[in-house]
Amino acid sequence: MKKLLSNLLVVSLFFSFIVQASYAETAKEDVIIVFKGGVTQKEKAVKNVNGEIKEVYKNIPVMTGKLPKSAIALLKKNKDILAVEIDQRIQVNGQVEDWGIQAVNAPTAWQSQFTGKGIKVAVLDTGISPHEDLVIAGGVSFVSYTTSYTDDNGHGQHVAGIIGAKNNGIGTVGAAPDAEIYAVKVLDRNGSGYLSDIIKGIDWSITNKMDIINLSLGASTHSLSLQKAVDKAYDSGILVVAAAGNKGNADGSGDTVEYPARYESTIAVSAIDSSNRRGNFSATGTTIEVTAPGVNIFSTHLNNQYAYMNGTSMAAPYVSGTLALLKQANPTLSHVQLREKLKDTVIDLGDVGKDTFFGYGLVQFPVLTQDTNGVAKTEEIQMQSDSHDEQPTIDPTPIQEPEQEPEPIVQPTPTPVQAPESIDQPATAPVQQPVQQPVKTEPIKTVTKPAKKKKLTSTIKTAKSTYSAGNSVIVNMKVVDQVTKKPIKNAKVKLTIAPPKGKVKVVTLKTNNKGEVSYKMTTNKRTTVKGNYKLSTSTNVANYSVKTASKTIKIK
Image 1 (cartoon, rainbow, N blue to C red):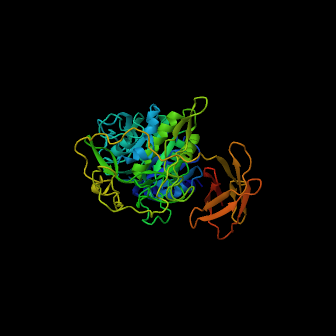
Image 2 (image 1 turned 135 degrees about the vertical axis):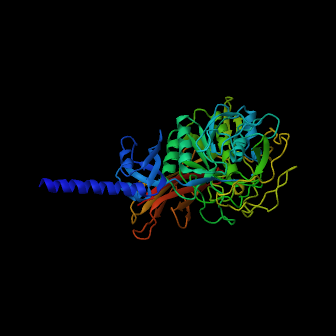
Image 3 (image 1 turned 45 degrees about the vertical axis):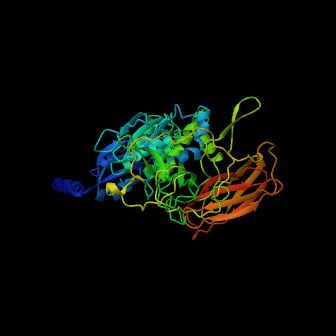
């Protein structure tokens, strides 16, 4: 009996050795592990499969490390682990003049002494270098080859200038020239970087209490770890702005928004030119929230120079800068309220209400007025646009240094992130000497203002947030006057139902005497696509401003 036990022990030890040896001899992958709950006391699962732990983040239940390829599938089955992801490479979104400052109405904010002062903006990018037109509040580097957050690509430098170039009479000026800009270097000299480094940058931004995170970068595939990171940042009170991506189809078809812009916790930004037309490279889709200038953008560049670049990478920092102005002007509002204000003060472009090209519309700092008690208020700017009748294409005229209005340029062909020369080249050669500041600080001159429209409140509700396939979903909508609270009869409500994939359904309804209208959304057990459905409404009533509302439900 003793001999039998001895033999079994030897076999057991030998088998254990074989298992460990097989893991040890297998090539290892850089991975990101997402845990259920916290990471503490769960590292053993990684070590048991001969894994190496590189880093555990402070605010997100995520660990990075190396795993034998043969152990990844086994670890995915662990009850404490939500996902094991390969640490993928992520690249910048972008390439592009300063006409954008007037387009987002930033000078109106400056005249009211709102310049972004005291607002902390983290630029997660290729870094930021010293420049006479920039002040860097601080920063950090997470790339492997340097501890310096100095920009060795030029992309981050350009993005930073759009947000916060100084209003000092030289070169250019950013949307929020007094904002505190932090350089968080997560991308390398080629404009690409590891997903794990992006997450480190977000984690750092949470720890250091940033107000806004600018993500002018993107990936084509979903990552649970990245979603957890941006969700945590938003839940911590940080506004997360993300470039929608430059892989849009020229005709604007399809849903081409990249990650993390696709996530609900981020503000996805598309790009327009100086004629309010969609840049033909700009991503389109139901998750586009707003649009901003992104064609022929003039900003700071390396070696104390300036350059023109194109891309949603340039549009995103215009939104970050506008949010910095709004936050300074409305210090008591939460990040959720500021996000709503951003949507409420846009100039609607394209189809009435939210659409797949421009989202809710072109971001604006609102005109400030005085009420009868002398208290500052904001109201939506009324402006006409020619974009409704024009095709969403860009005139293919080469960029020249503008004397008046710059001509749009052809969208650069997206290329893989391999060679430095294929990433984010300036649209023209950098300007050798700083030029006189091209932006005047007078408020936008508009045509005679139309009669002020009344405001309404529009709501969209469902009985619950999760439904099983085969059940019917009753979508209830209500429209009332915002001041009198009286229901509005015959209000035209356009309901858009956007599934996780497939065709978007749009129906137009009218409210009854109670200001209410319902829509029955039928589902099928076998054919209905499962996942998150975005329900959004655009309400149009004569003499009232257009109002939008949205809600997300899940069908499982």
